[in-house]
Amino acid sequence: MFSIKTAIRFITNNKLQSALIILGIAVGVAVQIFVGILIDSLQSSLVEQTIGSSPQVTVMKDKDKISNYPEIIDQSKNLAGVKASQAAVNGNAILVKDSENYPVFLRGINISQDTIYGFAQKIKSGALPGNGEVIVGADLMEKSGLAIGDEVALTKADRRSGTFKISGVFDLGNASINSGWLIADIPSVQDFFGYGDSVSSIEIQVEDVFAADVIADEIKSLEITSGLFVSDWKQENASLLTALQSQSTSSYMIQVFVLLSVVIAIASILAITVNQKSRQIGILKAMGLKDRATSSLFIYQGSILGFGGVVLGIALGLLLFWSFNTFAKNPDGSSIVTANYRWSYIAATGAIAFASSVLAGLMPAIKSSRLNPIDIIRNN
Image (tube, rainbow, N blue to C red; front, top):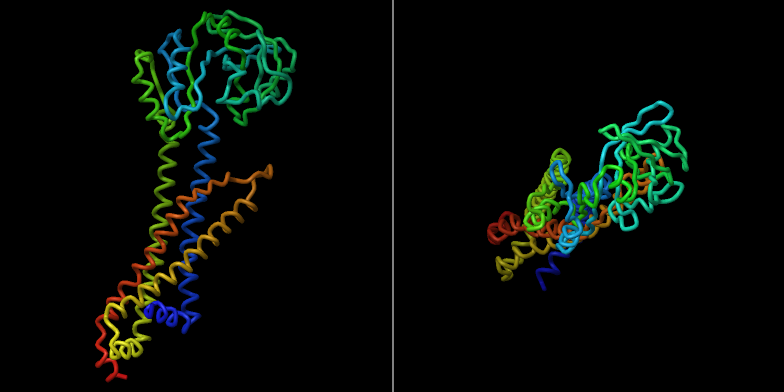
């Protein structure tokens, strides 16, 4: 108790120095939290835009059709971590309009049960397609001059053609999809491409996109998927994954160096405090205070200063990110990133900074324990 009271007195005797130490710790913690939350949010937004609204695992059969897809869908849905599993019939075709040819990708999915793309919520105008109908991407509608209710002629690779009626327009927020996809129900596309009761792929969405490769391996191990090709987004987007990993590595490096600078600053200032308070320490030792008690003075000082700096730093870091996310906007007025407050990371950052502050007091604590009270009093 005496050591704690003395440590507090040492801190309050030089308020400016103590305030600067707390501010230094707070700035370091704030930078760590701001950078960490910003990079996490950027990664989450990037993954959501590129991977989140699409399948992360795909099951296909090389140059053939999948006939036992209902069983595969049922078994894959039962796997831990799988959020959605649905069949799709895909094929390339040419859309002919006013003697102009437009390459398109015709997809058949069960729109009423679609939880991966969410086409039911992305209809810009018109209605969902029924039998023999399609919905068209907004960009393709604009550049081709098509309108809802038009009959469109589609030609396959074998030069056979068929017609579909446009029932609506969708906007998925992706330029390549909006400019080239046509969406219909599964039976209509099966009939157009001659698939019978088979499909061309099974698309699976997972809860944790970074665990897609693990779930893909589990699906490969199912007896029912023997002979099928299972791919995941990590295989198909190696460059994106590398970029995300590099981003995380740079974030960790920044945080390590910021933390190191905080520790050095605290240790240096507390070491100077030993010299400044050496006469008081010598007198306390001459009065019978043990070396262990004098050493604990600086451990307590580091703890108190660290706690104050961590609390202020967390508040400042959250305020910085809130300000950035509030005032930094896209041209359409939306926030640049979707905030991802990972509270476990914030708590861990605060705990590490506090522990570092306590450890920073070890060097001056050791130094103070070696002071000889007789020599100190004689020199003074």
